[in-house]
Amino acid sequence: MDLTHVETYRGAHDREGLRLRPGERLLAGGTWLFSEPQPQVTGLVDLTAMHWEPWEPLPGGGLRLAATCTVQQARAAPWPSPTLAERCADALLMSFKVQSAATVGGNLCLGLPAGAMIALTAALDGEVVVWTPDGAERRAPVADFVLDAGVVDLRPGEVLRSVELPGPALRQASALRRAALTTHGRSAALVIGRRSADAVVLTVTASVPRPVVLALPPTETAAAVRDAVAAACGATGWFADPHGAADWRAAQTVGLAAEVHAELVEGAA
Image (cartoon, rainbow, N blue to C red; front, top):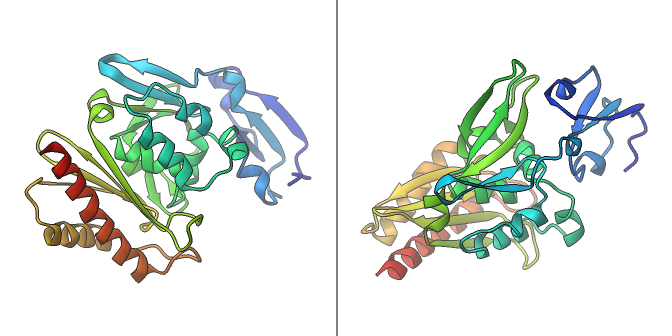
């Protein structure tokens, strides 16, 4: 898609360069920005000119993913077990061409219910680092950063800098279940679980407008898991679009959650 109203393009080389002028929009991968007309956009500010490292190790075995890290680069990061990252990247059904351009930050800031990197980072207890216009920064859990379908906690003048994942969550055993209307359809329900020392932490995306995270005892029965997930997601509200009706997504989600919980409990045993 040609952005025919764009008149200016500039790279952002420091935080001062991130201050947007009227009509300007930040550009990273551009896979969504160039996917449809943007008549209100008259200028582009290229975030990749900041030259952030795609990923960096953190103390304690953690991992920092830059906002400009592509999905392909995120897949290649030094995960203790890369399977979860790969399966999340594939869950939104991005082609390899899109994965080589689409960024972690762009995926988070779009706030799509089926956002691949939203699911991955929320499930791994991720925390976003947001640069504020006054030169400071603030942090928030990924699960709180996404407020609703297409709505995120990014205030005027703020820029998503990175998402940080703690070492303990990266090392914990994980499991994933996914449902879609067709074999190669966009995720309609995605449940990711990880086993902590005393709980199974379940993260639900795609079937809800924002991530839902809940920790359940490993001794919980399948029926109790289904009831807990139904209550937590019901309080948020079930999402519906052409990729699945709300009641069907709800039924799929609670069943997948019980399967994930059981797999992680049995694996620990």
